[in-house]
Length: 533
Image (cartoon, rainbow, N blue to C red; front, side, top):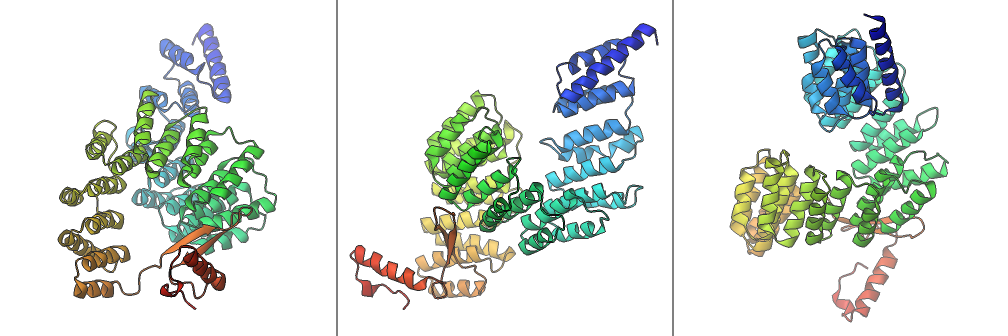
């Protein structure tokens, strides 16, 4: 190599080093052009540095193009690309690409590669591939790597296998914050709340913000919103510094799921006080909070104030408008979203089809369902089919809805069948309702929601003998209905009321007294109402 060429190479290396440190691709792309012009892509060090730059700047298409152009690729090349894809919107591609390391370039994976592919399996929900990866890791020279084991704990947890996660967790010799966080969050997200709290409370060195966030987020995911709010309050009382917005977003999600508007407003005030009001992540969570609490005007104002609106922002607002029964606003938002150059995702179409259902726009909803696959390459999920069936059922097109259910590519779940049964009850189609219920109950015997809907359909038709049989088939498996009321403006505390639970309620006497007072106020005959006691 000539002295001039060597000096040029050193200069390019320096440019790339600065670009990587600043995570700025501004100098990287001209350097890439110089590498090609000088024929330096064969220099593995140069190519790998450029690949690392594209990865750190989030330029995955550039990284993949460069990777394909490289005449030689080593372990660093492969690990960089797989890590980038695992963190992208299409993590499953890392799973399918990983075997090519050995097949194409004769490169064996190391701990970093195992961790990257485990992350891809976790984000894709690819349990079978995750187990295969675990088996290969166990017999590899890196089988004792605790970092990979932490990634496997996270993978099993996110794939709904907390017991498998615990087995791997127990094998970790030196438990890091990452491994404990993955296990606590995995327990909480999978509904094992007591196990999550036991592990959390048992940590000898206190609780970091990351650990608090994992526990609170996991509880929210598995329906433990009330407990999540209590833990958030405990965290604040312990004086844990909130240095990032993620735990705030988790607490807001808890308030949103509980429809606790006043608590949400208090959290909004805390967001402002802590200086996170400008965070897009927090802004999206606030829009979702106000929409789910029915304060659609506040949600709109916050949405319009967002400095940058990504697909999550647009989708949150579209779904909010749909769920609040404002279909015209949801469709207008979608038009603005497309005009802004933002591509919709699968959740966007859930909101759009729901909006069409609320507005009776059957053909429009069907067009969105088709466009999802044909124009945007999104495969319809069960949730999309359920929304489509609800759209058809609301319009009384029950035969078409039943045909659509029969043609679903994936196995229908309880939500889909219940949507159909509910429509049959609403439209008084007893024969169809019985047929659908029998088909579903053959695969899910004793499923409570469907059995209740079936018995209601039969009762409407006066088929009392069959009503008794349907209810007998359910046995005592039905979970009692419940509601939750926000009780205190200051604390945001909620009270749960269970169906049939008045006798054991701690404030029974006050509740009965208030019911009597309400009956008197409404001018009804108090004696005609059957209040206990």
